[in-house]
Image 1 (cartoon, rainbow, N blue to C red):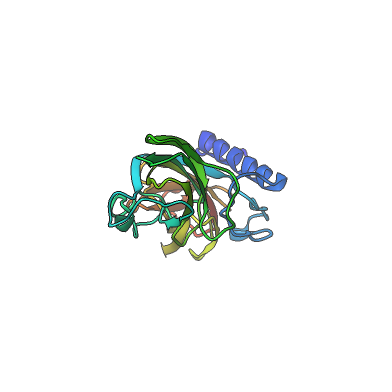
Image 2: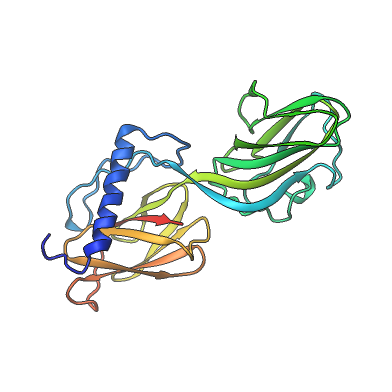
Length: 276
């Protein structure tokens, strides 16, 4: 290991990150889990076996307040007492008919929960609402209580992933119009284990695809814009180093070469984490 001079700070940070992730997975981390079970141990590129994390905590990403539901538009009507409606939250379809922004608010299909501002608009009587992930049993907790004036609240709501509709809302009393603005989302971390041939051996649901274009040249694609993100890449080989470069808004190129000969490229498996 004394020969890894050029990797210095980057290598140390990367290794510490991987050790932390491994410890988190071993202890059974909390939060929505979007990962498939990784292989029990991989020994790519002639390296030693390494236990990939079994679980990876969800991470939060904020978005500018964006409307996904407004029952005053889209040919809808106020929610009557006892009525149940299901709405689209992630992805790009289904928003205009429910009064939301056409094309959606940039919530990826891998999102497992969202933070929202939820408002009962011009209710005709005192009432309350419940909200839960579509396709799951109705909850007994109340997310919004309202009087006879417009009333709003902030909440973190679980949603169905990936297929919509994603969120179910039930109204009690009223009737009242409903407005929902999304302000952020929780989704699995962006992580991937790419095999020596460029195939995606393991990844969270954020990893879309990977490929190998030539010796030592790989491309990995995720489900969101990563053009302003940082990349931590660990090659499974000794004395080989990594460089990364943009390959479009959702993709990154990974270049693996010899530590002492930057023009000598090598194929090997590697583990990648994207931090935005």
